Image 1 (cartoon, rainbow, N blue to C red):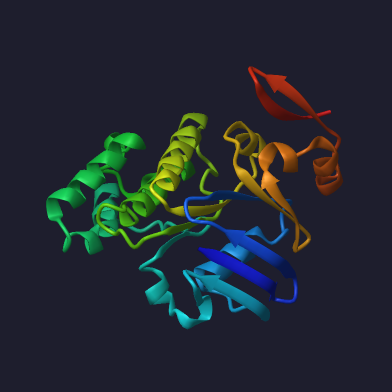
Image 2: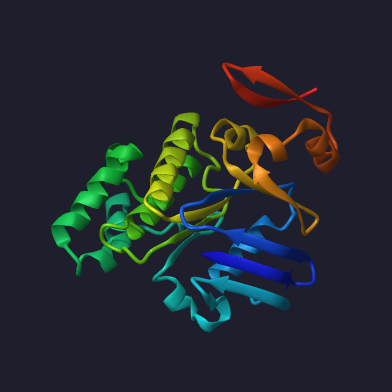
Length: 252
């Protein structure tokens, strides 16, 4: 799916070797400024590397235009939803616009499903400018899930999500992760930046740990997100405890 070799971006982010397989979900973790957003923007096609190679679906990513890439990948930037005077229902219809040519009844079914899964029914008539940060994030995510549904866009194989769980209440964080896990089972690959390290360990995600623009380590969360390693990265003492069979990280 994605293969990175000797990548350097903006004379800061350096990744020597990285492979992301089909159906794999990888959480990008690290302190502020570690390079998480830069990596996601580069994979989305918005930043050109200074050197190195990125292969996407067997071709150099530079060979795709941004419009062509959008046929295969979805991109959620931080604070991506503009506070325009659309209402929520109009925004979701807009997200599904490219799907109506495939099957209008199925497109409406996809919209209805995501409205239920992210509890958006009560928000449908409200304008985006009236929403809280968490409500707006749920609408942004709903737009991504609608526009990348494999029943209507079977070629869509990659989701790049920058802080998708920010501002969400816990029940919606878990709901979103369950939706992402379902997409992985269907064969989509997902890279998301994540600050809540305990969510990565709870859901046994693969983690790519970045530090000062460098690829430090990648592997299963419980092997990567250890208290000594995180204490070194974040400069605070941390400990690991076990709750109902799940490892949790706490300040110590």
